[in-house]
Length: 111
Image (cartoon, rainbow, N blue to C red; front, side):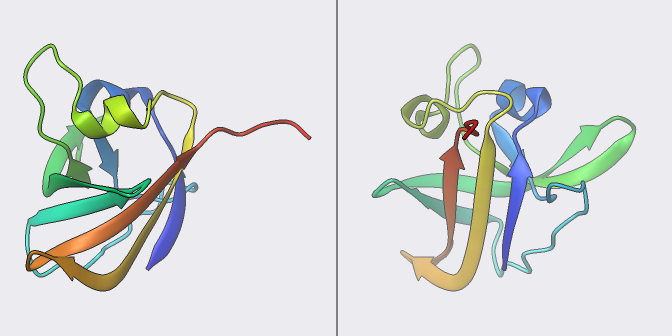
């Protein structure tokens, strides 16, 4: 599965990626575990799948552990900010027996 999405203010604040595409359509990754790893820029980060309550609805997303008031390693290393885009790919690969999801975060530029 592969889809692209905008990064929202909610996601930056909660240090997560909601599993919905550019059109806001929910994407179901059908993962065998809630505990996952995310690969990005040759590093691997622990994460989990959980539900978030957003505008009166529950939405599933990828959550990166962090202490209150601190930025998760993933969001810090990749310098994630609102308005960027992410490409999320899951090909059934694993790392240490957990599902491995690839995420590429990039900035839109005008040509």
